[in-house]
Image (cartoon, rainbow, N blue to C red; front, side, top):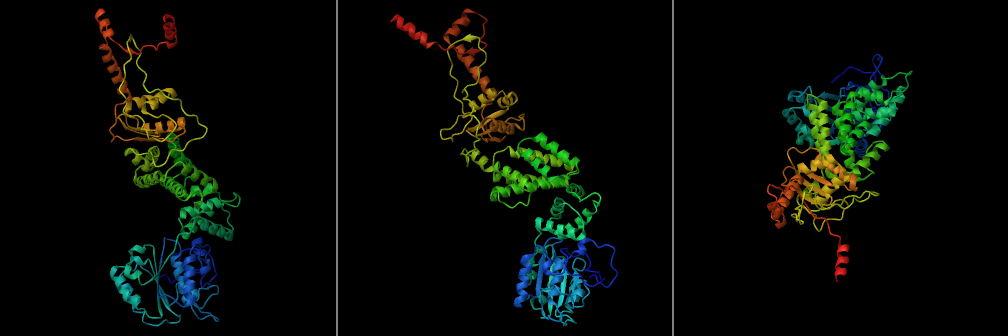
Length: 598
C-alpha cells in the first residue's frame, strides 16, 4: 500500500475512467499529471460501461442488503481498483446530513479524501502480487476482530487476489464465512479462474466488462475537449481499438497521441496515430482479404508487402484479417443488421463478402488465420509467415464448403443449389467425344467405349457442361490452352455432376488447378462450381490417356477390318497410321437416285 499523499488521487496503479470531484491536496501541485491518473472517476456516475454493476450496488445499498465480501474481476484497466475504492467510500460515506452507506458520492464525505489517497486507518489495501504468504493474511485477520477507529466499517481491499498462496486462501475462509459485522472485504483479480471456488462462493461477484469501442471513443473525445487537444475522431477510434476495452491503456495512448501534432499543424490525424501505433490501414487489409478470397493471389501478396513496407506489423495485419473474417461470419449468421462497429462502406463490403461464402467456409478460414497468427508470432521471418498464411487462405477459398465437400465425396447432391448470375448466356452444347487424330486410311466407323463419368439422371438442372466430356469440349471451345493442357494431362476424374466435380490430381499437377477451373467455370457459366482436388481419391484415366487408348483401339479394330486386311496384303510394308470416320452420305441424292431407278 502506498501511503504517499497525492494531489487528486491515489498511486497511479489503479484503473482509469472519468473525471469527477476535485479532492483537496496536501502537497505541491505537480507540473504535469498523466491522463491515466488525472481522469480517474470519483463517483459511480463517472464510471463508463459498468451500468449493470452500478445498478445492482445501488439497489442493494437502498435495500440495506450489503454483502460482506465482493469479488471484482475483469481485464486490465476496466476499473477494478477504482471501483473497490468507490465501494469503500460508499460504505463509509458520512456528511453533516447523511450518516449511512450511500452510492451518491457527489459531495465529499468526511472519509472520502483519505480513502481516495489510500491513507485511511480503517481502509487497508494490499497487493497480493507482492504479499502472497499466509503470514501476510494472518497479519490482516488479526485486526479484523477489532472495531474500526473512526469509520463505519473496516474495509480490506486485496488487489490481484489470485496471487495468494493456497495456505493464504485457506486462512481467509473462516473469516469470509463468518465475518464480524464491522468488516467488509473487496477483492480484485484479472485471473478469476485461479481463485478457489471456496472463496468465490463466499463473495458477491461482479464481472467488469471491456468498454465498447464507440463508448471509449466518445470518452476520449470528451477528454480531448477538457485538455483542449485536437485529435481526429478516426484517430481516437484507432486508439480505442488498440486499447481492447481498457480505459487505462486508451488514456496512456491518448497521452502519446496528443503530442504527435501541434497547434500550427492542426488536429492530430488518423494516419499519424496509425504510424504511432504501428497499425496497418484497415481498409487496405480488407482489400487484401478480398483479393485473397477471389483468387487474386499475386495482388494479395503485393498488397501484403506494401502494407509491411508502410510500417504494418505482420502480427497486426493477421489479427485484422481475423477481425474481418469474424465480422463476415457474424453477418452471415445474424444478417446485414449485425452490429459490427465499422464504417458504413466497410459494412457494405463485408456484407458482399458474406453473400459469397458459407458459414462452413468462414469457420475454416478462421481456423487457418488463428493457426497463422501463432506462426507469424513465432516465425523468424514474420512477413514470410504472413505470406504463407495468405496463400493457405487463398487455397482454402477455392475449395467447396466443408458441408458440400462431404456430400460430394459421398455422392450426394449439394445441400443448396448454386446461384445463377443474371444476364450471362448459357454455353453452347459440346460434343461428347474428343477430337480424333488426323486420318490416313478410310474405313467404317468404330464405336468407342462409353465414358465412366457421365451425368446422373437425377442431377439438378444447371447451366454449363453436363458431363466430363462436355467440360473438356468447353475448354477447347474457350481456347484456354494452358488450363486445357493441365486438365488433359494431370486430372483423373472421380465424380462429375452438374455443378460439382471431384478428381485425383497427379503428383506433378499444378497446385492451383482446382482454383483456376472453379474461377473459369464461374466466369463462363455464371455458376459457382464445387471443384475438389483430393490425392486420396481413386480417379479414372486422364483425358490424355483416354485419347491414347481410343486411338490404339481404333487402330486395332482397323487391322481386323477385311478391307484393310486386303489392302495391307496388296501393299506389303504398308502401316496403318491413323483412323478416320467416313464422310456422311448425302441422303437427298441417294433418295433421288432410288426414285429414278424405280
